[in-house]
Length: 338
Ligand code: GDP
Image (cartoon, protein in one colour):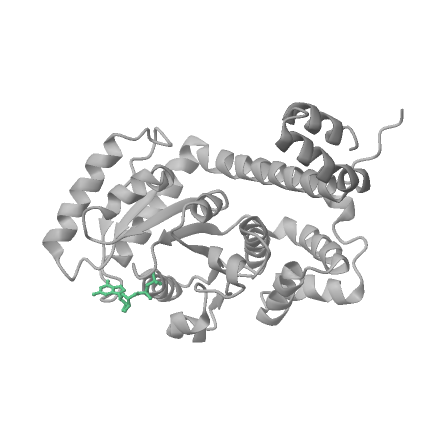
């Protein structure tokens, strides 16, 4: 049997792009914001022809990606994410960097509305030409939202943004999704006991590379207590990297205190993991995990849409419920149609 020829990124990069898409690619790589926003809209579109175009445009942009620092930021509503991202963003712009802010918002997949990434939440940053803020797409599932955010992140990188912040609100699954697409995952905490225990319970602290106790200005002593509690808790967890001890910083986003120290910790992290080779390895693992996720979800939807599966599923489901066939036999029979 002849094996189909594999498309190589180099020979397909600009192939199949029509004039409109070529101009999107050129605009994005020139760092222009309008083509950037248009490309992200194309990526977020649910139309089949748009999906195809989006993939072609993305493929053409891929050689221009990979240079940014990808920073995940998470925390419960009200912890101060947008205040912090605005302070951090303005600080980075002062350092001559361009910053993009994207959101993975689980609420957007449920209600179609978004509580994150809203432009009015970061007023100064959103008016700054060195910043690009994009609210969360309202896709059908968290997986869909995460996938689109991941692709939007690549487009922002191709547009030359130096730092991409992916923000999410603390509800478990979305944090894992964001940690799976960023280089460093930062957890914002409030300076009160119990809060950190919640994070441990949900397994969030395990995936954090950096922990920040915000609002330290309100009660500095409480913030220090929370810091030592969290440090003790971290000792009980297995470190993700032998070359990195998760720092716990206290910070006041509102008063712009601790932002420099935060960024120093981020750059230290990058240096340490680059030296050990883990930085590149993590990105490779993330790309593989992403591919398998897409294969899994693609297979699932192909399966559910298969005419014979659709036809037989109700009857077999009934039989399984009644106990007249086993789940295993029913699954085998349905999978046999693929
Ligand atoms: P988000 O929901 O996590 O994005 O939180 P916001 O950034 O909207 O902040 C929620 C509230 O906390 C706002 O009223 C902020 O002004 C306030 N806030 C944020 N950071 C700080 C801080 O460092 N100190 C104090 N005292 N208030 C803060």
